[in-house]
Image (cartoon, rainbow, N blue to C red; front, side, top):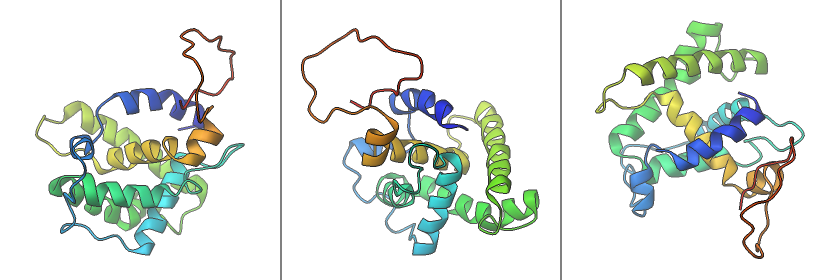
Length: 188
């Protein structure tokens, strides 16, 4: 996914259903604290996955926004225990099993191009899974990672101020502002 696709997806993402959103809206009362524990290596891994989804270009990437830390907090504090367990199992699978099966090495050993190829395959897999899943089925782990990457990046200071247009204290309401092709989307 390129940055332009991510920007167009963020409106859907932030306006749509997020996994764990009910808990987040109700205050995130340590829903999965006993199910998950993230190590510094896990957070570094999540930063690399996020950076592959939203790499640094002329704007900062997801790693600079510390999206790995964001993912860890949301999964631990806001996800239901079953969702958190699925996320952790998926993270472990992506680190080794899925990566070795698809590219012949672990995710962290892979080149940026190999990582991108792997995540494109996983994205297609999660989309197919999403179309067939039943209401009670847990989401595909890569969908959770991708949603958290977009959510974490575009709500971070780096994402809101460097990738989007941001006015810290907006003035009057202007309901109709001209948009020029290539302009950044608004964060506020």
